[in-house]
Amino acid sequence: MKKIYFLSDAHLGGRAFCDNRERELALCKFLDSIKDDAQAVYLLGDIFDFWFEYHNVIPKGFTRFLGKVSELTDSGIEIHFFIGNHDMWTYDYLAQECGVILHQEPCRIQLPSVSGKDVCAYVGHGDGLGDPSRGFRFIRAIFHSRICRWLFRNIFPADLGMEFGLRWARHSRLKHLRNMVAENGDRLSVSDDGVVRNQLGDVLSANVETEDAFQGEANEPLVVFSKAYLKEHPQTDFFIFGHRHIELDLMLSSQSRLFILGDWIRKNTFVTWDGENMFMDNFL
Image (cartoon, rainbow, N blue to C red; front, side):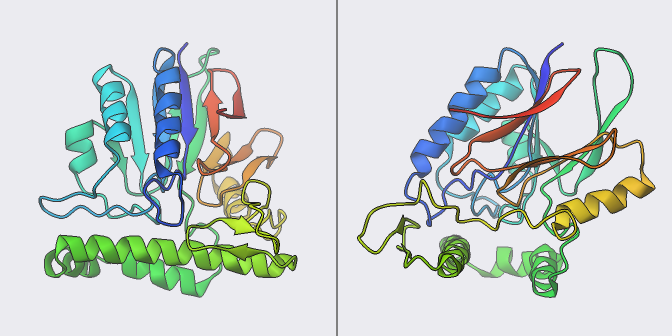
């Protein structure tokens, strides 16, 4: 039986990162390595750091990744693309030109199994699920608004709109990094390209955790959401999300597990379903 793969949060093209080409090549290398045994690949959001489709214009770059995705879909492999909070402005380009199956919302999927029994997973990017932040929900509602999308698409010139989106994404990322570094208290600094250094100027970005740590089962939004959803849908075997940039494999009950996928910025994390088992790994 062929396998099903899940990954998320590559943030390709992000201006807060200095290794976009290297990460794109790593992602393409991974997709190339699984093409002979993959039945489907689920890309669970924030694959791009900013993506907005105008009527006749798409963002510059990503040619290697888009070409690899097209190669896989042309060979019969299903590529499912779930929008994230950075690439939610996706319309029909990826579906028409690259052959992906586009998902605007999280959904339940049936996984094929060796035993033939039904195996159900609830999958999506994860933004907004269980999150108590009113500010985040407000911003998310604006970004998802059809009126706001129409205004952005039809009033802003493409170059201006792309510049605005890329700067917004970069500012958001660097603000988050600097907040995390400030809380660390070790006199660390974050440069404009997202590199973390100590007071001597030594680069520490590969060794310093710059994402919010796991908040515990009672406070982690995706855990809270999954437990509540499981009460209403007890036959859900797996929950698989991105968004949080943490690696998590958590048993929610004797039969249900939650995976949070890490990222493709530093961790190169993916989850595999082989027909019997679901497991997390890192592509090195």
